[in-house]
Image 1 (cartoon, one colour):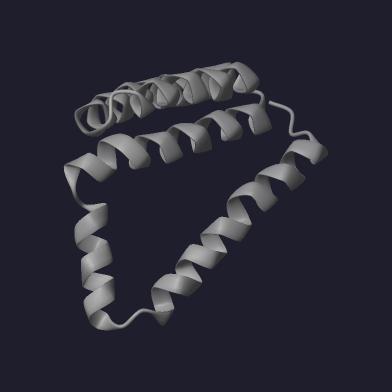
Image 2 (spheres, helix red, strand yellow):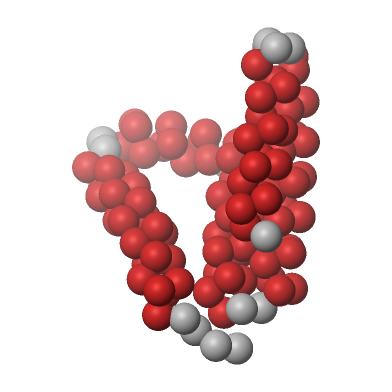
Length: 113
């Protein structure tokens, strides 16, 4: 388990800055907006689409950081499940645009491997 300095810096920048911005934005919200955000984040559609995509990408980048393939492949598996779910959800709304989601997720998985 070796930690590469370049991977550590990119990991901290890639996950630190967005996390800081989201927390800062959440703290600036009023109570009604906070409750609405909590309700949206707890919905099943959000968890199985964006939630799995973000968690999978976090695991894949954390696996790259620690050079542990099992964590990296777990992240890729979660990204794949999220991609399938996003495609099904988008298929109901627009069939043409829903074909773009698996292509973009496949490109992201290719670069993660």
